[in-house]
Length: 394
Image (cartoon, rainbow, N blue to C red; front, top):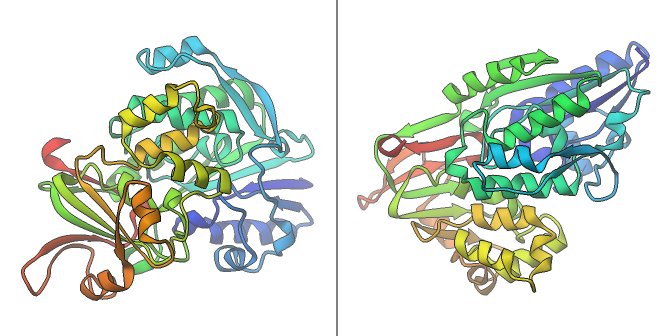
């Protein structure tokens, strides 16, 4: 073996333990004279910074990390046909999807490709990772945009926490038809992080779909929390080192929406959120269209004058996912975005410094808390690590 490509998650999956695993693989291989390249699965996220790389991946030289350019640095392998999309979405989607991937995945100079990641409930696909790490993490714009939109149209609450969703079937099709001959081995973790300390419950390694299925079974046990009845007030904390945009911070919306009661309230404590989109174009689209609900976004999506939204289906899907459709209120408590900007995208706004006096993450414990004045809240210190569901309605 002469050359290996490692595809780990980026800093948004810090608690996956994939950083440590990547470090172990890197040193084990390089000590044996193997050349190793590292291509973080960014999707549309910002490249991993030098500081993030040091925290997550340890002493791997920063120059070994290759930024993924989802718009330009990909090759087209084929497409998932429209007829198949119609079949798996119950007739809700009618267009084919191009299968694009970073050109390095197809580089035959690599003797082994290690796709490392965490299996956890996910708003777009149902359960994250495996082929998603490839077709979204280092995939191209058509696959990223359309897969997200397929998930939004089909309905995220029909998919979260489940295997064999329409979006998962798109990726499975891509694996079977276009990547089956590539030397790809999946390294999948199932983790939780009580108190911020990573706890690894399972590690699944192999080159088949079986590793995904085994990991999903464990993640459904470890990463889905059922509450007995709908939560009236949910308070979610976003670690500023991990969440700097609502694009990522809206995991607080996605992962709790199945647990919050009708007429309830979601308060997002977001001291590190400074803008909306991960890149400037997506940020502009969020500001333009706002989190106005599924029907409003679909209506805007169909209007001939809104080509910018059609050209960025992933953003359109994100706007759908990030709205409660009026079922509960969403309040962002921030430090570096103005009230006018927050309200401009259809969230309620609050001062982080004011809210943290009453809802101090350092004092709240995970789950139900009763405050001195009798108010009952449900506190979640990191929404990325789980999925919360009202058992009465599941």
